[in-house]
Image (cartoon, rainbow, N blue to C red; front, top):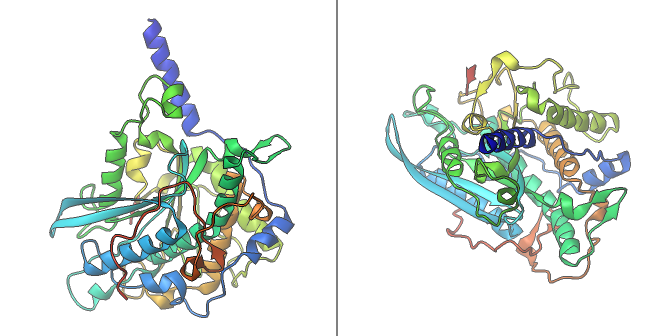
Length: 408
């Protein structure tokens, strides 16, 4: 009987911890302005910067897919994030295909993670011209935004990590920086989101299904903080995910975002609040008719099939940021550069910066407020004006040289 009660209690702790609220430290208007001051140089075209490297047909298993993998890897190699690749082969309606998920973690030793994710593959078509589909909104733009976010966050996270390792974390107004640093950022680029024929449970989200399955069976070591806190069920890699925020079908002028899950309504509201405050402070360009992207009505009856599903089914807390209804160019050759809006991409970039800073209690004015430390920086390590610094995470060498319900 005692063992049974312990088991029930552990399940209760697991369910509560999975959907716990985080303390909210909203940025002031002056801090919002500081976030904007850290913008990379303004691009004149959507083909500038990271996005230009991703706007190619890149179906899973193709040479172009590998080129995109290598480019993403090169960005995080310069930033000194920990890299993990999960290559695997799966049967598809067109034969066996090789897939590779890309996983980047700022501090792999942190016990918990905020996961930001998007899929980097494009839909496969057998014949010309459909096989030139590049999926600009689906999901080249979200991937480019995540790359930019990683560049923005790295100096802030480096400064925090330097203060903590030097024994001088910030302590102010009940805020414990060392405690906040127990949650790090992980960015996942899923391969194989797109179906090869028709969307089914077996022909879709190949990478997400594989990774969720692997992590659900990868148990944490006894020394891990989550293992010490809970006896049963034994925590797995999935237990380290505080929240999974998945981005898809973004980058065009119009976005209509809803909250699909009651457990993360509060997280949705915080992202919407960041957008509202940026608009009120006139810190983002709002295109005509696009004042409000975040809808007050919820999307409970219209959950969209996407990479989050295998994680959601295993108890991971999910915020799905996807435009519904889908863009008019969805899965057509017209989902190209002409479908994208530079003001919209900049707006998403700033919304996400504010969202992550507030989630992790990062303050832009704290960047550089750390003790002297070794800096590994050269001209190639200066990305969009932000210096990439060494951190305690292992440095990952670039493995390959860079060569020049709805269903989604």
